[in-house]
Length: 171
Image (cartoon, rainbow, N blue to C red; front, side, top):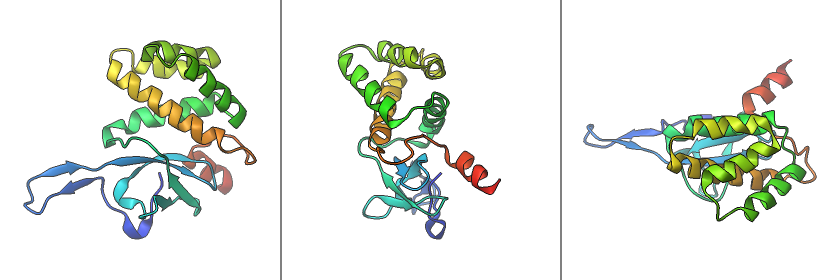
């Protein structure tokens, strides 16, 4: 997860009256240094939409919707399945074109299209099978992350998860 240790704030906020708990917005971020994706509490982002990643590099907010803390598991599952699939910037561009071709289809059909690329992506289809709203959210997250990966041309192009990348550097 991306964070700035100097401003570590919980993603739940207790109002001045002490009784109201409000859910904070979570913003998808992408680290330019290690390629990590994370949902970052909006309060941890600078006014320019960036935060400090665990690797020390800058993580930038990705454009689009914000999410809640309850979306963390779905986000992590999508990032993990994309990593297990070995998505490179070339693959990401191809998948975005395929998803664009079936944009008018139902979310579950679009997830099945992704599953044809890699069986690792099938986990998400199973996870969201009972909720069309969660399926739509999953597709939006896939597209957002694929667009970020597609723009990494010239870098390694491989998707990494922060804790794994950090463990690899420490080994």
